[in-house]
Image 1 (cartoon, rainbow, N blue to C red):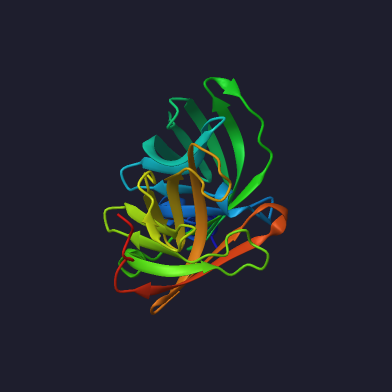
Image 2: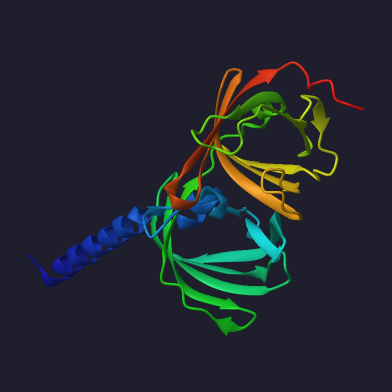
Length: 264
């Protein structure tokens, strides 16, 4: 066998091998597109109110949604798309300004990325130019279904968690523009529409987040928000939320034709 043929054979094998290796590499740019909900930190389930949403859009704009503590008496859920992102192999670089006008720069290291599951660590994190260490590992679930049509409407139900301070029935009325009404009963069993609710809700797959004002149970004042995972089976809906001390709070409700007659 002549020497030139041997060299050609080795060259051909090398080209084929490199081509196969490249083709087997995950297409992170395509797999990453879409919305993701954080579900675990360091492989432990997080409290539902502590989740956040990342959406990587095709125009390299990133939406980030999370609950913010605005001051000692107020907190609220906000969406913000003032971020851009780029991908270099398994690194995601993110730059932008959050809902409180703070400047962020992050480099995320993709540990694994499948069709519906993303795991990453933080390689670089700076806030307003100050480097902050973050050694945690984050796991996110991809949001693949839109439940808005099933979710809108009027729901009637109560908390079914044993020992809950909230033992009364309520009405919730959700509109397709993201607003909602909340109804409760006073001490004389009259239905009251909570006029100072300032309600707005957000849906991310089977995660619902609602902003509201003045917590009737705690008696506190100010703005607040809550996150719930929900499931809908025909005209029945169940909310679940992991709260402090690994307590799971559950609400069960039924879809009804209309809101209650209220006290004028």
